[in-house]
Structures are given as structure tokens and as C-alpha cells.
Length: 387
Image (cartoon, one colour):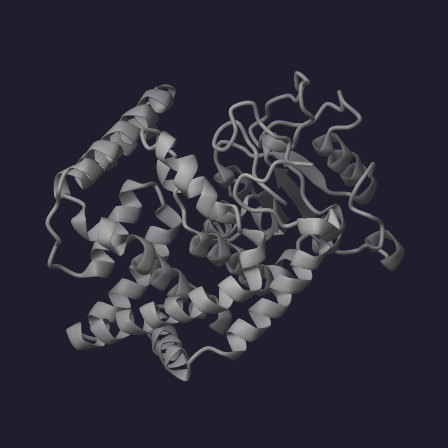
């Protein structure tokens, strides 16, 4: 049995089929239960964006953005409000060094981890300025650029309507997050039961690492990620299906264990060379050869898929963990690339979660359904075994 580090979508069934039914039903109930005041904010924000000539998004996307802002304020507002200005400047300079000199990435990551830990030890006074502004700055220092931009758009709208409006909007976001805490725990909590144990036992040992923030995410943030992937998949679905070329991006942690992978590096990410029949990446690649989609491992920068003449004809399927998948949807959306997210059934990569590495997996039946164009008999095949 695979060791569960933080979350597992499989539970006792041995596959994640039940999870996908659950998250679909949960998204429906969450959207139906949103307070009308939230949609008043959505209406005002839509008009604000139209006045600036910016493209529209769906009501569900806007509502989720407000929820995400509320969850971040609830879980990290205190940390963001205590962040000294000098830490913000230092972290941004280190990020600039990494972009200018990519070979120094490992050293910069190490320095960011150390400085992040040191900053947390220094007693800071609560900043009296706008908490959303502080949250946006905090996200910027942690390389959360997609969130920084999305929340920044809402912040501009809030400020344009005055301080009282801003306070009311923040209160509504926090209320939305509070309600979500209760409902998500009831329906999604069974998938995240090990998160609290990981936070108490393992996460403190990694506080000096550059990924300490990712490893310290709360159970509520896992639930946010689950809902986010579902909401964004619905929003981008038709645009994705209309693309001519489909590309599936998988993480290296899905490769077969104890095997020296022979994948070759390309500008679009590493390409499988079929060295190991039991390797899940190999199996998905073989399926792609039969069904006309490409498979690559996560590239250094997803922008490579938006740099060519055919960018409008490419649809991406991103396979990653609960904490990162929905944010990837925002990143590809900003590039004008329609994408669909598919979650890893559990985490296990050597980069973040396990020193030796646990081979991860995803639901192959859902992968086929996401890609579209498969017959009912093909969709009914079990997600285990050879493909």
C-alpha cells in the first residue's frame, strides 16, 4: 500500500473515481450556496474590467477568486502583515538574480529559504496599511506571481471604490472562506486526513528550505486546490476541446522507481523514450501515440507553449498535485492557453515530499475523459494496469 504523506484521492477504493464524483457534486453545491452579496461584488468587478477593456471571465471564476483571496487572508494574513519591507525588497532582488543568472538558481533558492526562516524569527509589528496590499506583496516575495496578479486586479477595484467598500469586501471574502472551511471539511476532509500529522511532525524539519511555504500549506488550502481545479476545468472546457493539438504535461515523479530514466530533454520538457514498460509516463505516452496527443514532462517554463504561431491551437492537460494544479490554470490562462487540470492521486516526489521518492499516479480514466473523443467502452476501462 502506498504511504500517504498528506492527501490521497484513492481511499479504500484503490482508485480516485469516487473523488471525482465527490468534487463535482461539491462544486455544484458550493456555487449554489454562495451569498448573493458575493455576486454583487462579481457584477461590479465585471463592469470595472469592461470599462478598462479587459476580457471577461465567468461568474464561477470570479467567485472562486474571491474565495481564494479570503482563504489566503485567513491562513496567511498575519504573516503577510508582519513582513518587514526589507524582507520584501531582499526576496525580490534574489528573484531578479535568479532570472538574470539561471545557473545560480540553487544558491538563490537556498538563500531564500534561510532568509524566509530568519524573517519569521524576527518579531514584526503589524503593518497598518491595507491587508490586501500586504498579502499581494507577500505573494510576490514567494514567487506566487499568478496569485499576485489576480488578487492585484481585485485590490485595484476595491481601492477604486474607497476604504469603506474595501473593508466590506474583505469582510465578505473572509466570510466566504469561513463558510468554505466548514463545508469543505465535511465533504473533502476524508481525503486530507494526514495533512495535520505532516504539519506537526514533518513540516517543521523543512523550515530552512525554499519550499517551506508549500510544505506548510494548511488543510483548508488543500481543499481550495481541489475546488479550484474543478472550477477552472469547467471554465476552460469548451476552449480546450476546440483546440487542434492536445499536450499532456506530467511530473517526473510519475516515472518508474529504481530506474535510470532515459527521457531526452527538449525545449518543451523531457520526452519519454519507452525504456521501462511499467513506467506510468511510458504508458501515457503510448496512449498518446494511439490517440493523437503528445506527452512531455514539466518544462522549465510553461510559456514555451505560448511562444509559437500555433499557440491558439494547443490545449494543455497539466497533471500535478492538489496544491499547485489550480494555480497552473491561472498561469496558462494568462498566456491565452486553454488548459485542463488533472490531480495526482497523492504526493511523493523527491523534490518536496520524500527523500527517496514515491512514484505517483493519476486517474487514467479521467485523463481520457478530460482529453475527450473516447468511446464509452474506452472510458469504462480500469485506470490500473497497462494502457
